[in-house]
Length: 391
Image (cartoon, rainbow, N blue to C red; front, side, top):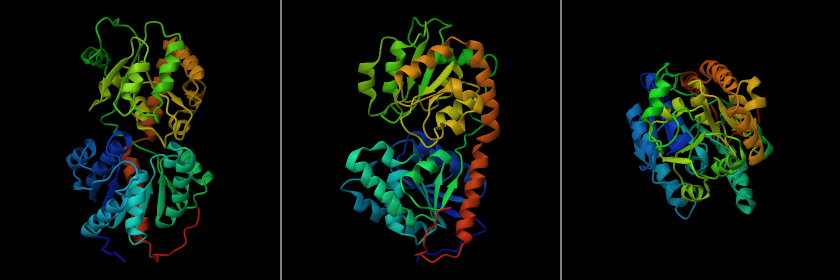
């Protein structure tokens, strides 16, 4: 059994094994390791070198190791598992924290319960798949749970999705948190100045409402559903802006009606959030999306699909206005029409969303809860073949 003293100057070493390296997972890991550095932990991030995660984690104070892993399982999986095992032995962590399905697969196969292991799915892989592939992913998650000292979900609904899939595990639920110092309401003049600084096409009226969607251009985020809804919604002179890049980019550009703006990737989405009159995220599945939390912390109202984490993100009074079924363009169009036609309602939704988000979703609180989880696991004396029981 791999073993290391759990303290060195009372500092835990945690190895974050991560794939993917962009989007919400990268932001969660970067914010988490920054908070862990401030708290005196020694975070190590093992991830592929491409994408923003490696640089962001290093800047946040983590030690970064190259783990060359592809996003999806493939013929290189065996090599990826062996490489993960070598990195883990070299790092000798007190805790392994595997983020998302691929790292959860490789990390748990490499360690198999010999080091306290936290698996955080960041939305379940089987939700992204169909047919036999979905069945295989579900079967693996049921089996792999035996090598997870804790499965960490970011919402109660994400946990329930796992339970409905037949995964028996020891569960923890810790909501995503955001950096409230970075994401805060703009000053009176900041929103106007943010809009004037954005690369918007000429000819957009200065007072035209902006509807912004921040997310990887992918099937998961549902921008295709938003484009279909936009065609039928009564939006007046409002403009739709899609911030991000991804594998569906070209397909979405071909399908977009006139006037939709594609910005490409953005290293800082705050100017878009500050300039937005409404942020929309029409996801097909999530654990708990970050972009809506970031927007609400800035006082920007949001419109979401009813996927895991959405109801827990929104204040209860927002549900009739700000939540629609996934993959339902008519319902999304009706909600867009209603919100764009009600500026006073949007302003009130923004105020109440800001208050709730800033009181509930602070990354410092999230990091503290994660640290307590690590300490609990490291402090436990457990045999490597202990049966996991559902809690």
